[in-house]
Length: 110
Length: 114
Image: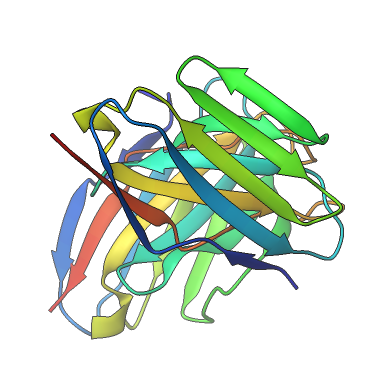
């Protein structure tokens, strides 16, 4: 099976940097995804890591350590519109589909 | 706009009834997924189809069924509805079925069972 843990809630200030952690335990590993989801809307793809290291994409970066079963999403220069739920999702081996964590609700305040 | 289209956007129905949710994947995508999202459970994987064939099954109830048609659109059928089935149902699609394929989500269908 797969188990994914991430904090339930985080708060940060506009303009700051925030790191959202995700730990996982899976039977096989074929990549880790981060999605952003605003309330009542569709999850939107942010990043994909399959090898160890940091992937940077604008204000967002994602890091993966396969040996530690650990990833983080780093958001820089926070904006009010970044207030959303951030979902960590892991793809297991073979044809297994994405398993999602319960999400981290990020609240950005002025 | 992800390119995944779902209908209806909102649906209110009574317990014991049956509903059908429809999904058109992004152009070129062969794989379709169905997810259920409720407040306390997060995104739960229900079922996946690839090019018309069932590929993977998650925590889908026996009262629920799905299929993918030759034109690649998919339908999720929910029957004998219960209050607890009230949730946001997402369809998603990807090009392939294996690793590395990014899954793109539709806007979802809000189902309320009263």
